[in-house]
Image 1 (tube, rainbow over the protein chains, first blue to last red):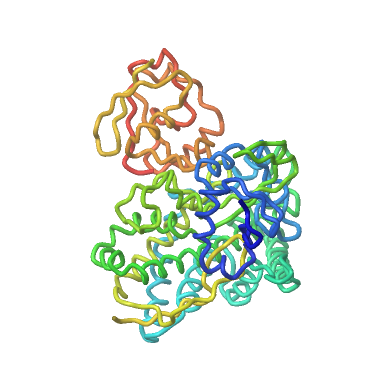
Image 2: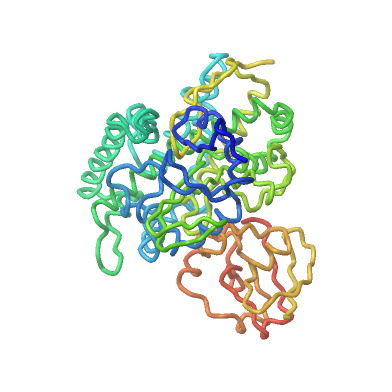
Length: 395
Length: 106
C-alpha cells in the first residue's frame, strides 16, 4: 500500500549527485525499473547490459539520426558519424576509419612517448598537481592534434572550448549560451582549417574529408566540419576524461596500481577494466523509429531512449561482482566504447595513447594520493569526469 | 548440427556444435572461446573477430562483401588469404568439420 510520504524514484542526469556517483541510481534502475521514463530528461532510460547491447546493434529501431549526446549541440545531428544511421553512416565511416586502425597509428607511438616524458618531467618537479590540467589534457590535445595534423599553438583555447561543449546547465537542464558558444568556437576553428586545407591539401584527416566522395558527390560542408569538430571533442575530452578516471581508479585502488607499476604489461588489462568500471562515456541517446514494448513499458515511435553504458558495465546479470575493480576479470562484452555500428571510432587510438601515457605515469609515479577528499565533477549528461584531479606524489 | 573446431589464441582446441545460421563469431562468444573480442557485436565495424579459416573450407564460405574486405585491412594480426571476419560467416552444413584459428592479437 502506498503511503502519502512515499517518494517516487527519480533519475535526473542534471543532478550534481548523479555527476558525482551515478552507480546507485543505475542499480535501482536495473533492479526495479529496467525501462524507466524520466521526467527530468524526457526520455526512456535503459540500464541493463543486454538491452543496451541490443539497442546498439538494432540501429533500425534505435536510430541515431536525432542526436546521440543526451544534450545535443546545434548542427550536429545528421552531420556526424554518431548522429547518422546506416547506410550513409557506413559510407562516411569507411572514408576515415583506416586512419584510426591500430596498424596505421604506429607512427604516433614515438612522438607520444616523447610528449609523455616531457609532461611527466614537469609533473615530477611540481610534486602536487592537477592531473587533468597538468597531465591528461596536455597529452590528449598534443596527440590528437598530431593525429589530425593541426598546428601546435592552438591547444589552450581549443581545450577550454571543448570542455564547455560537453557541459550542460544544471538549472535550466539544457545547453547554456556558454556551452553553445564553446562549440561554435570549435566549429569556427575547424572551418578555418578547412579553408586552409582546401587551398593547400595535406596528407591529413581533414584534407581526406574535403577530397572524399560518396557516390561521386563530395561530402556536405556540415559533414566535414561537424565530423572533424566531433573528433576533436572526442579525442581531446573523452580521452582526457578517461585518463583521469584511470588515475582516479588507481588512487582508489593502490594495490592494482602497484601491480601495474611493477609490471607494465598489465596495462591492457587495466585499461579494459577501467573502461568497464568507469568509462568517461556514460550515457548516450537514440530515438525510436517504431513503437516498442520493453519490460512492460509501451515506448512510442519518436521517443528518446537513453543508453546507460556505465550501467551496462556494472550489470550483475553480465559481470560477476561488478562493483569490484578486478584486473583478472574477463572484460569481454564491456560497453565502455559503446558497441554496435557506432563503436567508438577512436577506440584503438584511445587504447594506444592510454597504454603509453598511463604506463609511463605509473612507472615513474608508482605512489601518489588524492590531495582532496571530494572531487568536483563536470556537469554533463553524457560524460563523467572530474573537473580537477588534485594529486600529490608520494605515500 | 555442424561441428566446428576453434583453435583459440592460446593454441587450445575446442570442438563445438553450432546451429545453422549462427556466425563463427557468435559461436566463439557463446562458447567463451579465447581471442575473439567482437567489440562491435557483429556489425562489421571493428575487425576484432578476425580469424583464419581452414584451407579446405575456403571455397565453401559465403563470398566476402566489400565491407568485410575493407574492415579486414584494419585487422591487427597479419591478413592472409585465409582471413575472414567471424561475424560475417554463417554456419552451413557444408562447413561441418571446419577448423578456425584465432590470432593472438585483435
